[in-house]
Image (cartoon, rainbow over all chains, first blue to last red; front, side):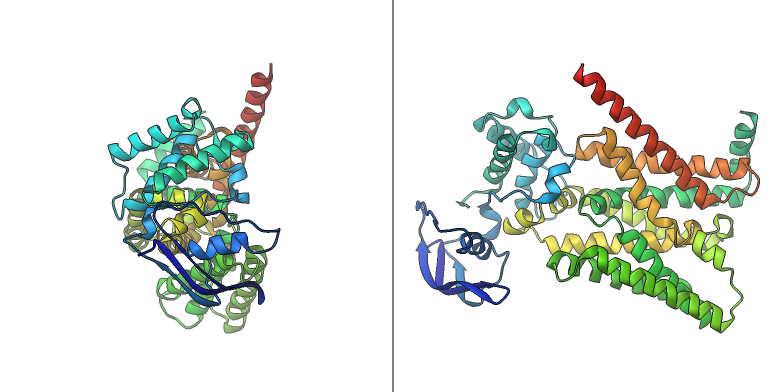
Length: 156
Length: 279
């Protein structure tokens, strides 16, 4: 079974339909690129796949044992983050949060994973740097490291 | 200096002063902790809105002769939910909503108090009266403030994630609705207890000042949280010292003035640090 199955998906914002009757499957190992003009609904489709937006019609099913807390996601920047006082390490580590359930603190393994992902993206030196003082590209790498912490199965 | 020492000695000598300091410091710390999240989520004025709602509820409960806590607590919690929920959905601009609700509730409260002719002092409602706290108030406040502190510590990392990036948290399977509701309830409880001694018009200062002061100098979220909590507790104590040392000094206003001075001091330090870093 596919990891993600979309059937007859119709998406809209403010009653303005952007995507109509879209059906596709994503299987393990697939890389899927979504290309389109500005305003053609790329972000809207992503949001629907992530469960951040309701579909007007149609269904999106997660299959093959894919759970929501195994998904990594690299979002566009939000305005809150631009002046948010947080260290790079705190941001990356928060990616591990989705499997902690009700456990209030991080485990050693999760902290180790955060450090490894930071090393992968070459931002170890920025560990204690303040997120809001980084350049746009550095911030993006921090968010990518966070996405890697969150994902075990699927990454947007 | 002697006046200050004597004021401090008095605080520890008189039971009613000590009571006020204990409850006030606890609530100040709670307000500052929650304030960090609210200020960063652009909900700084939520405390202000909620305290006005609390004032309205308080006025109605006094006019009808029912327990004020029993009316204002559920009403304020309900409104806190509504504010965060409507704000997150983007149905209505948060600031506009708070403006509508707070002035509306304030007007209703003043109307009810005036027309019903109940024998209450509006000044106490609006600006608080630290020394009117009874032993019962202290127990209620402790029973509510301690859970706020414990829950904040237990859910600290989740609160960070939800505050920093709610969309990411939700997309990766964290129940953001749950934690947003938690913040709403804890804030409502803190405001309802706090407005008894800070007053409806001043309590939101405890939510806004300490986080903003801490953010002037701290660059890590954890440090901001710890610093805000410490500053808030300290400000309350110093405000009380001020109020005992200076005759006729109102306590709530004194506390906020100390907060203001600390904020200015910290912004100055931050500016100096930036200048030094440049050279």
